[in-house]
Length: 592
Image (cartoon, rainbow, N blue to C red):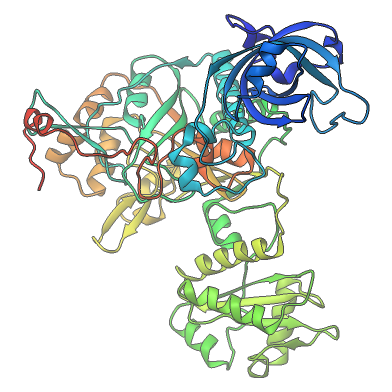
């Protein structure tokens, strides 16, 4: 939105942040908040702020009524100011301010509203407790840096809509009050007044509805969808959030990935960032093997290497026992800008132990090619040389090795890799490195319940070559599924969907649902699939996470207008709260 658009249907002629030398000698009307008031005796200076920025207003006794009011004005008063744009006197120009060459000499001032003294200054340079900021969120949102988050959010959402509209997608709303279906997290439930004992659920995603829209012939759907999950919170998770939700009929995985890359290029161009396409790809197996995670940050190297064969005949008991038990040995190397101290190495060892490792072997490569390590004496010369060769290690490199069960080692080294990048500042802060992770397993094993679970969701289409595996080796089946990762954050995920009832029933049965449960939970979908459902697939991205990454924020709360705390409460409104007994009686609910 341009500054001119802010003036349409407005009581002002100009915005504070839009005045320049080209406006000299113009009569203007500004409106906004008082950022600061400075009384210099015969002159009073007011820094006025609106969404566009700051303008300096000067008031002198030649306008007696305005001057008398200016003496009473305090920060965050809302004013309307009439005046003439003039040049700032020599020596008072502020080059750090877009309006730093001009000032407005006030001829009239109207106080539109007064303000109590705010609990904190509306100033980006001050460090204010987050709980206090969220308690007075309407004041926090006035700060330029916070406001900037929502300008970017608007641009991202508008760019997504514009792109998808141009590609033939239709914006369709799906229900907020819907049926509870198992999607991995707890549902937020809404009791029905007219059907006692029955409940709606707030949607965790529009998944089933967007599939049915494909059956209905919409062909290309999108929605900036509100989604809800009753789960424990963290920096990049909220109980309610917005996702860019997309579904396409008659599309292959390649079609969808190409469309998403073009969409991301359009979104980033809208905020003046150029990104490279096509995005690199790794299979789920490759990502886990090389980076120890299925959402790796590829802004830095630190590749994990398998060293199990290197130590296959070792006499070092820890490594030998691990291999004998069916475990694996993997390592990674880093070249720190300054040598790690023994305390650094001990800290990193404790970090690994905190993740479940039995220990962390480390090796410092010396200038002569020898290694320094508490366990160096237990390894043969050939083993040491093979390890250095396998990791392509050189002088001053530090090697970290973990030996344990196969399911544990990648997670430990993956987390260690991220920790090293943070400690050594390896990731470029304003780089945006996208990665597709593909070929996910169709299922994972639920050890606690001794059954299969879906890796993504139960509606994911297996790869054609994996269909024969469903009956005898289901854990080897590969899904037509893909995640988009940005700087180590899962930005979104998608799959091709099952579009035939028989296959969908088969997968649901493999997940432990009997015919009655299938009908109860998914009967409407199964029935729809019998009426000529086209092949289709889609993807969904977290809008909040995307804006968080673009803005370089550490918490998703910074880019949501009215977020919840980690205890899922709104400090401004006090939600969740108790309700009147009469409301509970209408719903036939009694608190326990």
